[in-house]
Amino acid sequence: MISDTIAAIATSTAGVGAISIIRISGDDAFLIANNIFKGVNLLTQKSHTIHYGHIVDKKNDLMLDEVLVMLMRGPRSFTAEDVVEINCHGGTFVTKKILELILASGARHAHAGEFSKRAFLNGRVDLSEAEAIMDVIEAKSTHSLELALSGLDGRVRHLIEKLRASILNIVATIEVNIDYPEYDDVTVMTNDILKPQLTHVYEEMEKLLQTAHTGQLLKNGIKTAIIGRPNVGKSSLLNKLIREDKAIVTDIAGTTRDTVEAYVNIGGLTLNLIDTAGIRETTDVVEAIGVEKSKKLIEEAQLILLVLNANEPLSEEDLTLLTLTESKNRLILLNKSDLSSKIDTTVIPDYIHTSMIEETGIDTLESNIKTLFEINDIRTDETFISNARHIAKLEESKTAILNALTSLEFDTFLDMVELDIKAAWEILGEIIGLSAPDSLIDELFTKFCLGK
Image (cartoon, rainbow, N blue to C red; front, side):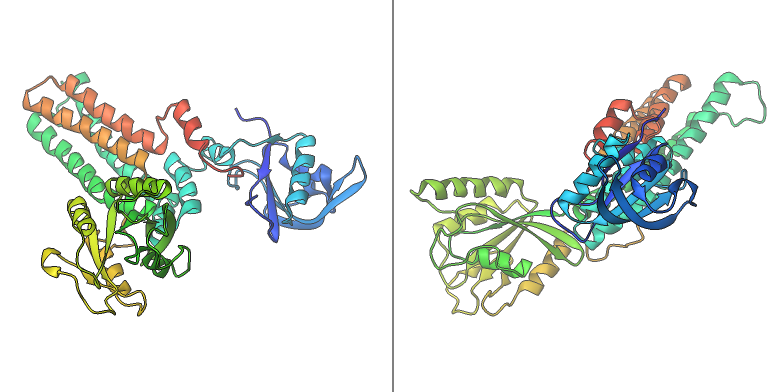
């Protein structure tokens, strides 16, 4: 039973903005707001209305700000409780003073994610929809936003509910066979009938998991390392891709001594770009650390952009990098193609000519990235499972179905096979919060920001 009233700043506290919003949720939300509001009597106003007035510290006879107050009576609110949102000016000091006044008037400061947790506990959203809220906030591209919204509007839940319904139908038939074998109008659940039904469920899970990799790329972006020896144009490439001068560019080898990170959006896909220190032998201690980090990033990156200087013959460092990256997803760029070519291309499998001076090759690079990761023809109406927890639970449930199918091959008793099938059903329920333990619920919502 949730009985206390919580409050928190719902907008960013990182800096000053035009407007800040303080959210209050709980049984006493209207009463607390009314006690500090100078204007109409909020207790007598209709739900989903906005009222102009002032926030006043009545104890000290001090007016804090001119505000608009939005009223939402439960269950027609985000938390399904009575909710008040105070829209004040966006100064950090005034926002915090209003929050302090609300807390002094009887509200408790909300924990991280507590508003969303209450929405879940009150049945306003399921667990997958609650997690999608943070995905919307953290979205960095068109596709990642579309994925988040598909979770928010319940499409992930519908997929999981459809799978659970198929499994539950199988379990129900097994139960009737076990408990009421004398019924003539009940389908006798033999292996020949059960196996195709379980196989169909297994195949549906496989389809979802096959698209999960794409879903994760769209949601999280592609960790991309720009690799090459010093002064081949790595930092210039980073700057061209992000359309700003983030990395320092000079003719001096070893300018980039540490990694420089940035995000770039390519056709709705996010690249998490890392411009690495040029890889070479060096006696400079700081640069050497950067070189070691660059080598480690080659192992961790999902995509390698290997930059070579087309105006110079291949060096030992170039050949080493070609070998180090040959098993990775990589695109090779022959940069400085505006100059005369001196590089031996016969030992380079595939490459793209680029020139940061003439700004050529960038469109080809972006197109090749989309082709490499097979994201050219993504259907925006398709629902992808992209949450790592959901994928893990789906894998776990699929394993339980596979165990049931294996048991059928050995003619195991039906009630023993049923245990694995029920386990698969329960595990799927954890995705949408129907059978998730309290400890999991608490952990998930602590990852949310305050005010959500």
